[in-house]
Length: 109
Image (cartoon, rainbow, N blue to C red):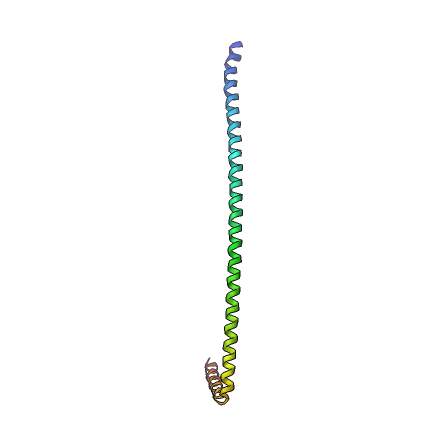
């Protein structure tokens, strides 16, 4: 029986060493995973901040384009109104002609 205990003690020692190594490796992996997660969170925050910044720039650009388009439409409307006042008969005949064309096109469909 003493021989049996001596044989199991070295095996027990190897198992204990292996268990310690496994525990150390688990700790190292946990630390690395935590660092990786922290890095990913930081990268995500940076990407989010950059995306918000670009969104703000795009909003500003879209707002400027909208205002420019609105101004152009107003200018065209004013120019059209001015031309109609200058030549009312011609404007009326052109409008009637366009109306007739649209009526013919509409009727054929």
